[in-house]
Image: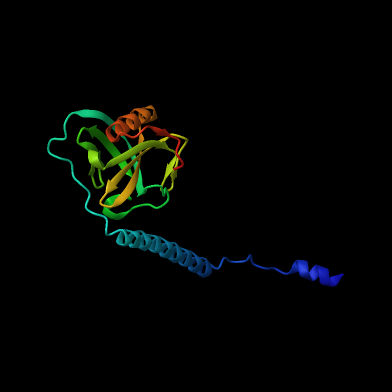
Length: 189
């Protein structure tokens, strides 16, 4: 019985945390996160370089005509038409932002505070429809106003969401009446 008593009798200090190992792991993790962020940023820039053939975005004319519709909301991005995951980042089209849309006889004026504004001339408008997703943003059915337009030789889908989603149908009808395209709801986007 003596050995058991001796073991219980020994005094031991509590284990001390090895701070240098923990700090090393934290620094390693921070470097890994920084590397992943840098790679994502480089990928975004590379995508913009690949899309460098995209023409300059048109600007609004001095006299756009009478306002048909106006809307406040969010701009969720632009993609290659029909390819809802193929985001276009060139010319600032990849940046999500607040938006003020104005539809006139001359076209669609897209004003984005803190991002590049652009104008879609009426003859470049191809179609408008209610969609549910674009470039990583998925909403309920009909929760997104998707405007298809032509820039140079490329068809582009741009996604907008109004602060009042009930406005979307009116926008689809108005844009399609300008393009002579029948209204389409719930297309696969």
